[in-house]
Length: 496
Image: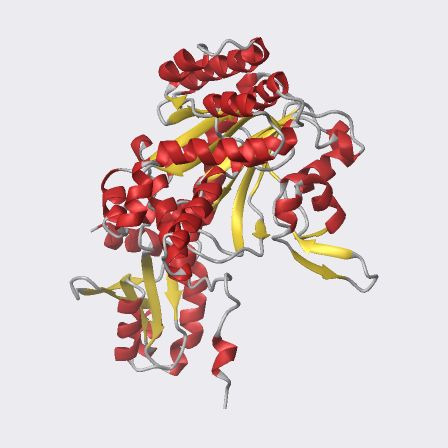
């Protein structure tokens, strides 16, 4: 007797039955198609990498999410959690072979030991698109446009998602101008703002006497409400307790209190913390954003603002400015980002995970022993994008059509069916079951695979060098000679 536990998959890992795989393939095909349209060429790397590579390039947070193993030589290996370090390693070895700009993309299978939840799995495909060797802000604009065009190609409208954009140098320069604290100690705090708010709400609810588990659930709901908008936010508010709603009504005050406290705890003065919070509160569409950011009189951030202005102009030229929101609180947690950064999210907040994220990096290849090779790139997983496409009923997958179904009437007809199938397969989408079944069973299977025409061959057909053809939709049946015109005559029957 088989143990039923053997039928279970590892949590966070999926079984890809044909219908589900077709949905995944819809996303992957659009990723590949759009990347190629922008002139990017496909590459791949190994599924296993040395731990040292990721450890040196991706930051401590990512190292907590890896699947690690050792080989027979006791080397520490991991299933790759992202592709950018692999790209950097490959180019550090071979970059002189390629003319700049280098436009590469890849859709690897990646692995992260995260808690499985909506929009988050442990094994997934992720598009990685990079342009390397060009420092101009136009390359960053191209990256953002590629991401937007993929989202559009999958069926989402510009008002159904936002692409948030910021500049890491704006944050770096501003922090350095107001404090001696290393920006790398402050920027991760900005990146974790929503997590801090969730923890704050949970602690407040517990202190008010709420059960720990209930407080945890309500804090998670608070986070969803914070990230949502419109009808979906109203629906979530209807699920919240009064205590949670009361806290949400004070969201601006709470956010300021929490973030200033975090900045001060990191060593900043109260005055500097308030200045940084003021900066990271600026957010909006192009005109509104630049009007507000230029009101901050700080020469240190002038260069980054000019970059963002130029980026806005280029995005408008690409026809990709509409879904863009400039947001000074966007930081991106990975250590290697140095310039423009961006992330895309569902507008309604029904799916809280990012659709994609990326930005400019300047030193990945050089620190691995290669020559300086600046780059801009992004990653886009299939899980969130597929969920949003289905949520908005935009999954346009044509049902696969079988033109011909070929079946023998008798066992002696099987060789003729095999020969005919081999001939017709190059011209038609066909299925053949060369089995000694009853005719009724063949018709049932033809209906199951949604075939248009059923081709039957029996002893008399062989004798007369003909094939019997039945149109499934009408039941109309005819005979066609097996001659040079067979393909043409079958095509006419399919078209009528």
